[in-house]
Amino acid sequence: MFKKKGDDKKEAAKKSDAPAAAGAAAGSVASSGLEAGTGAAGLASSQTSQAASGAQASPTSSASGLAAQEPLSAEGAQSGQKNPYKISIVTDVLLPVTLALGCCGAFCATVKIVPDKVSIYGVSKEISEAENVADKSLVSPQFPEEVAQSEPLKLLKKGDVAAALNAARTLAGKKGDDARSLYVAGVTMVQGGSKADKEKGVEYLAKAYELAPYSQFVLLEYARGLNAVNRDDDSIGMYEKLLRVFADKAGMAPKRELGDMYLKTNKSAEAVKTFTELMQIDAKDPSYQRKLGFALAQEGRQQDGFEEFRKGFTKEQDTLGYPYAVYDIVSAHAGLLESALADQEKVVAKNPNDLQALLALARLYIGTNKLKEARDTLEKARKLQELNPDLHEIMAEVMCRQNQSTSGFDEFRMAVNNMHLKD
Image (cartoon, rainbow, N blue to C red; front, side, top):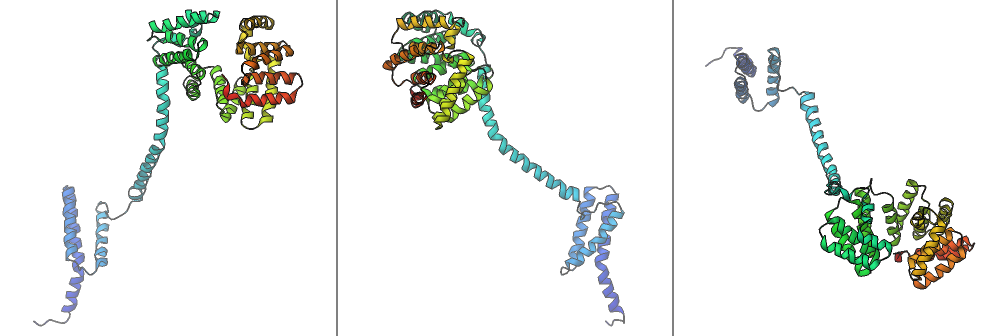
């Protein structure tokens, strides 16, 4: 019951050594567990002992508990044990951050790529249809020459329009599931028929395109047919698709015709862009510059457009010797302008109310410098269709050549204002 002097000090020392002794005992157990090869079981036992010793320590001093654990780590390090409380910069900081950034980057890249893939797949679908060629003859470079020998088109070329139309209807009736036959029938009726015939011809061409979406020739004539029946937006869509899908095969004609469609529909910005590109691609063709003049005027720059127009027809005269619009007629006469003119006069004499024949004749007169004859011919054409934009375009050129620039400018503006009436 009675304590000796110094006993209080000994008990206090024992109490202060108790946590350290408990930590040492736990370290000894963990070490023996690892040395015995118990692996995860030994480690678990060590952690259990540490938890038990922590429970016996004073709950009021967490700082003293942590201080008691530090010698344990040092002893573990001396025995080869990895310190579970030490933070590794590489594995605990840099690696998780790098992985997180990588995942975020992959997610962002996915968000950006998805719309691009959608647009690419849209084009790929069109191209895949164009590449799935069922009849190679429909994509052959010889195809236009081959179909020109068909009965309906031969009759149409001879001028026997009624017989050509009958032959076209018969062909479409017999071979309504054949793309080539529908193509021939459609072209014949669009080029030679009445309004109702043209509409039927477009139906044939639409069916031909449905059967052969891989043929650039079928698609081109379908676009032309839509233009002939004044389905302007549909025609522009087909022209744009042709140039998008068959960029390497289409040639220059579809792009030029698309530029004309832009002019017809008052899409001046697209027309300026198209004819500017054509001038850069094919500097030998002088017709693009005069068309660029109309596009500029349509965009509101009339004086600039008029100057481009004048440069254009001057270049045509210097390069070809005649307006580019009658290039095919002159070429059909081996490039002999006088021969072409003589034959065209016969055509007009036979069909005096044929507006297009009259306009071609006026252009040939310009090429032979017969400006009075050209002007007289245009006055006859004016009585047939006063607002025709081609008529005013040719008249503007004639007046400029006769040094009547003011009157020529008036005719030029009239052509620009009536471009929507172009056939």
